[in-house]
Image (cartoon, rainbow, N blue to C red):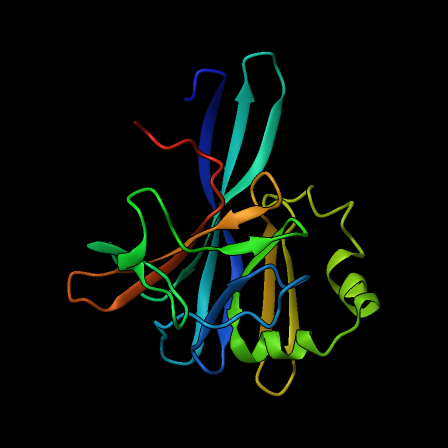
Length: 199
């Protein structure tokens, strides 16, 4: 609770993310599909996705439903430690205590997708992107996950781009890698900064 609103957070299945290379990218695919992959990769495969949706109840009445986080579950086990997901050339040691690396959103949409899947979208023109990702924009807030679109972009590999609306909209959003007690990657989570930090 942040003094003016109450957040009720729920997790919803959001399909699977197909990773033919295992090199995961966080980005706004409508604007920056050419973004670099994270330095931490996983084995190629199909991984469940979850969307964490916050129902934000305001003191003055009314409720907003916003995607607070997008998660790719690599191993369904508890996380023992978290680390910031970075791309090549980003140095976490150079950051201040409250700083983070993230990806920019300019079309209110975020994804965690394979580098090869996004390479396909890179070749699309604006009309194709709009047809695929925005054609049902007015309807996509009626399901449990606001803005959820899941598109197979490469029939040969099954590679897909799964998008959700990014929290309150445009901004810069960080992704974190969760590791299990054995140090292996358990999950990737992008935080859309909907739920206020406790402090």
